[in-house]
Image (cartoon, rainbow, N blue to C red; front, side):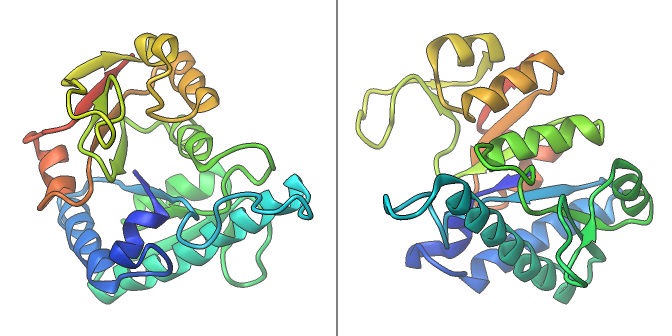
Length: 226
């Protein structure tokens, strides 16, 4: 599952809104209690939105963004633990004793032990977004589906915030997403999902019980099919 940092910040748009994070935690706990294995990638937009000054090198800006995702995962992991879940945070680079180093074997072992796994730090390389990070990790751990919890409730043919007549898709193929540049995820992530046949379900995080409903079959978003 991909969570946006901005969504976790609530109306403040920066930092964290604990009530929002706790609502997410309780939904994920319901899934984990049913034996569903959940891995989570969190964006860093509540702290850092890429290079904001010409005085900052792009590589350094991306590294700051990677560290923002680590901070987010540490925080959200603690809220998850507070409601009774076991968690692990994996990163593609060493963070001292804060996290464990990612490997597929470690992630699968954590899943087998009933832990919710946070994949922090993106891909570990500049020029790749957390969109690419979530698809890459999904491919590596052989996930059944990627859940994209967004601020809007699905995929539209235009920006629904700017165009009230924008049409929402119930289903759309990943080839259409690429051809029409529908921006479900960035182009690199879209092609990676297409080539590895990983479906994506897009839904609104702010809708009541949307995570549980999505997994349990009461889906109200858009299915991106492969």
